Image (cartoon, rainbow, N blue to C red; front, side, top):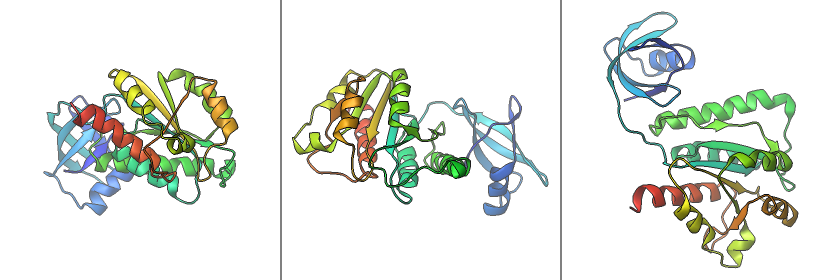
Length: 249
């Protein structure tokens, strides 16, 4: 059953769907009155709905049954990625959303080859957010992760104060065999708490960046004995979080 994140509710038990989702329902899926879809509100409530009417501009869907439960991780994992080359960040956002990431915070690291173009910012962020929305629909998430505008390392540090737990995925720790920081952090986390994990770009984080982060409450951790690519490491970490909280018990 197709899933749509809706920000417009006609009444308590009715949804009004327009824009891209209207186009997807009518032009791509070629649905008709009587078909069933799932509508999700911004706060995460979802309902099985029956399409009651299709006009030239909107789809009207009536609630058949409000759903219970959630597919969200019990903790809020925020992925901070040093801006990578090409479409690697799009992959991180797409697959990271499928794996349960709460938010994505790109940042400009010293070794980021890609330089952030402020003139193209709005369009770029809109694309990233669209990728997150489509991935959330596909993976039956209850919410769409937010994708922020890229920050500087200083801005990232300033913003980090709102997160309960803070880690740095640092390849030097992996080389030295560090294996406990991630596991011990997950063991002490409680449901609803937040975890910010910082990942470097292709060339990794500099020792100065790591020192600055560590001075502000971040703990360095390894992600196993192998050195992972910048687009692989966040997915490994999210998988580890899912295993710990959703499968281990």
